[in-house]
Amino acid sequence: MDRDLVSFRSALIAAVITVVTALASPARAQSGPELRWGGDAEGGAPFVEADPKDPARLIGFDVEVAELLARDLSRSPRFVQVPFTSLEASAARGDFDIGLSGIEDSPARRARLAVTVPYYEFREILTVRAADRPRFRTLADLRERRVATLGATLAYDMLVAAQARYGIVPITYEDDVHPYSDLALGRVDAVVLDHVLAERGVSRNSGLANQEPALGVGHYVGVLAPGDNELRDRVDEILRHAMRDGRLESIFRRWGMWNEDQSRLYARVLTSSPTEMVPASAGAAGLDVWEATRRYAPSLVRAAVITLVVSCVAMALAVVVGALIASGRVYGPRPLKSLLTAYVEVIRGTPLLLQLFVLYFGLAEVVQLPAFLAALIGLGLNYAAYESEIYRGALEAVPQGQLDAARTLGLTDRQTLALVRGPQAFRLALAPMTNDFVALLKDSSLVSVITVVELTKQTSIFAANIGTWLVPGALCAGLYLVMSLPLARLARRIEKGWRRG
Image (cartoon, rainbow, N blue to C red; front, top):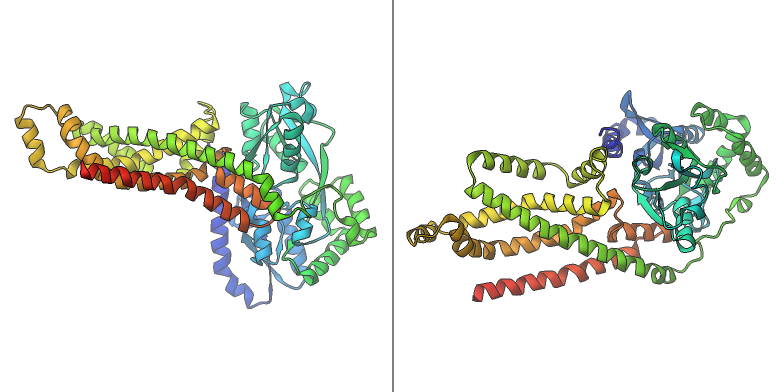
């Protein structure tokens, strides 16, 4: 289970690194200016990761590239932790001077940001299970199959195009570890990512194999805020000089990533003008935001339906299980009360995100739950703990005199619960139940970590592809309000009806 939770641990380590770096930054600032560079330590080796021997220290080839740039700029490097899918937006905001974290070159990215010359060439690789290698050689062979990748990447764009052509079902992940572990477990039929990640994925899972030839070619670049052309030009000059004197080659050789592709790339970079290095592949650089919104609207609506279904079914499960837990804690024997109390405290005392990771990835070798089912169970059991406390409080709020009267009339505990205590407790619990449902509707966004593409995840992909969160964020908020406000109003009407009754 430790390996399956590697991305969660990496995110935690990244947070520690950020805090340590922030605390140490004043002392470094006194020695000279800084080069703030953004990256995602959750991406792991060989890009950026916490040193296993010293978690407060970063290692990776992008770390060394950043140090090279800082040294030639007479600055000291300072790492800024940013989730991979947010690097572009953070660069546009000016949260750092340059982003370096396996960021792929594209016409759309060059239209929105100041982008450096490419410093590494990669190949997009199809990875399959070794037993499937003879029959899954190309994307065409994966018709109507589930193929995993990372969102907001060249590989994702390729799969979206293949979806229209071959009916391939793209499955997006938040990290580059679980696509390969899920492929080994049979949850997906293939993975498409760059060869740097593919080779690492195959080395960690002996039952996988990479296919040849490559599906495409891409390049890693640095990204800066739009208009920051002066610093970008200085970085380009440093990168070109490092290509000539072999310093970049030395970095990639240390990480076992040097190949003849890089020699050809460096020759082109050193003999070409900046405009000639712009990718020739079709992209969204000239796509109007409103046209993009029109195209993405059906996907957002479908994702909103998934969010609503997940929330409603999970809430129904939470209500049923929560009621059983509350009844057990009020009426059950002492051992049952202790067991149910422990369940409530454990669930409330641990993050929902961790529970989803353990349920879907951690238990995969014991039971392989489909992502949608794991999302329902994870949300339902988590909210059942909170609902049980609401119901228990409501049950205990019914006046003792009414319970004594029920016993005097000869009613059993079950009859008292069904006819006297339960209906009154429901009235007391209805308002907080409604509040919990609205909260669950929003918390359903967390199920994207187990590959369920709900509303927030689809919005994130939309925003990454057009380079702005303004329009996608407004649409996402509007859809959440459309779903939550009528439900809240319905609950208030039911509550008023019960009061009148």
